[in-house]
Picture 1 (cartoon, rainbow, N blue to C red):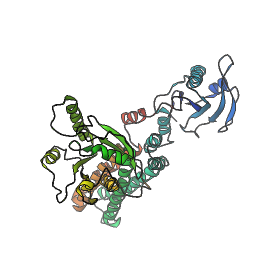
Picture 2 (cartoon, rainbow, N blue to C red):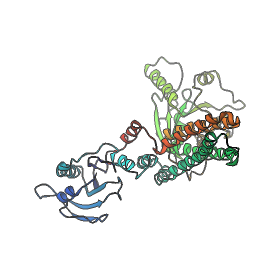
Picture 3 (tube, rainbow, N blue to C red):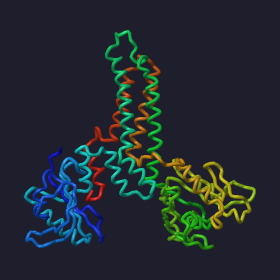
Picture 4 (spheres, rainbow, N blue to C red):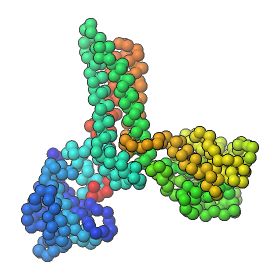
Length: 454
């Protein structure tokens, strides 16, 4: 147990609601229970009654629940006071908790401090702690399910299985290094090559599932670009299923970005309609075009909208000029609009081009599924982990070290020490995911992004 000050906070969102919760955590909360409830509480049993002020008057009526240590969210004693969810009532109740707890040093909790204590007291590992915030912030049903799996420990279990396999492999390598005079080849006898292959395969599978989960969590920024009047706003409306952008026959109607969040198969997409790209002397339109290029630099996928023409798929000079300025790191999907005018059918060319009509909706479904494929989404999202960018980074670096380890293993006994070091570095990266060996400054950044009462 970590010896720390008792903390208190309102655990429900700001605003009015039927129920509001004040949460308290610390080594001993008997002083607060006695002051506000006036009687002992049976562990984990909701007790209805008044919450009293210092002069004995009633602040509110509600439920009090006491969770003794270590069987609580934080691993310390936890008290939850569930009253009416008005902001004034909640602040009065919190102020009373702080007043009554002054003798034991109760203070306001920092953002994420309850979950931080759960991590420090081994109630959750770091990946599970982050899953708490991800579950609260989940934007889609599928994201919520994936966050729940991570919170239940599925992601951590997969990472720990990798670590255990690495430890077994490292033991073989270290044994060979420690006893070079032995005639027994520990690596061959222990099937070191086979073990390394299995670890690499396991890691590749975890990385695929984590990468897809990260897409559920972060969503995909899709930027629509093209010359004026090519149909970008119409396409945004078709994707959104609503009239969210103004559509006219006048070129340059859109002078600033219009963003719409949509879902495709449970994956959140942030579709951004931008000002048409062209040379202009209009100051307002020029500013809009500058903002278009800013959004292009931030994009995950660029949809370059062009007009479909019968008998030709080649871009004209203006579209070639636009394409030449696009950043090479961002995937570009060529979309040929107005097939109803050109008289050509809707079709898709792998992940490179889509022919559609934003006006009639013909081919828009092809665009939706092509966008997901371009982002690496695979149908059937069960078993995904709602991973964060730091998880993906650690998995990629671990994969790189295992690739290096495979190269060292192929060199035989001459590279054993380097092989052992690559395996150690891979394990170190995996341990960072669950917080086995995490830096204090990393923990501070993670938990500071939680809400106050969590």
